[in-house]
Image (cartoon, rainbow, N blue to C red; front, side):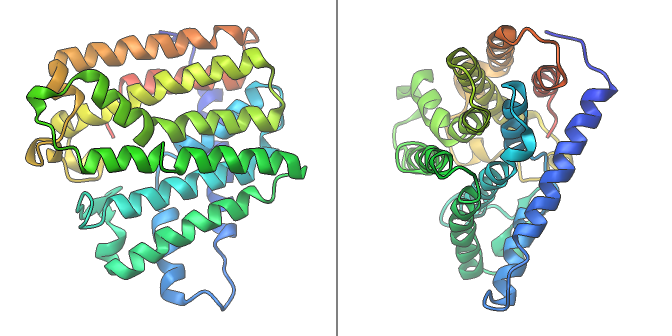
Length: 302
């Protein structure tokens, strides 16, 4: 794996995260027509401390393909809003029934179930309002369609549905089935984050293909490490309840591959993700930041 990581990369990521946080804060300064409780629930979930992985990927992809990442801020915010909405709904009693998210009470625990459902609904709508700020209109339309597909019935929501209503036993399953679930449930939004950045930058076909490939492998590695953390992680560090997969008899990579096998699969997919970046021959800060994210994922603790 690439080892060329320096303080500039850290500063660059911190700058992007700071801009995203400020933009999300500004986007949720609603007028008086938004009920106070709803506003509080939206901001509680959206502005909770987090990695901002997906919106950062939007901005980095834009910069890597020769664009100005500042032009991609509305798309970055939209992706994070979709992600936050999906977490709120995923944590509900009817879904994963989680009490903790990012080290804090989940939205329905902090407020109540109806408020959490409506906060998620509002964030989903707000995401597409943010996409509407992109110019020209043709670009906004293209990005809107891309994000809608990623968040829709054949991708994120479809993956969630299959995960919730999977009835096959672990013995009858296979690794291809679980990969198909998580490629949609987790990977689709990561992949789309990179694609949105490409669209906004006017990326070449070669750049599109490379970052799309990176997104597929990076998203898969992210999910496998998530599964490993559920087994091996520290609940205080991870910030959510662990050992759920075993308790709920859920399919996971460690259950199919074993701990060591899952770790090897993380290494394999991250190497493939890193290899896909070779088309970006300029040794710029955006490329180095993606390399640093690969390295960080290999060592992920939360």
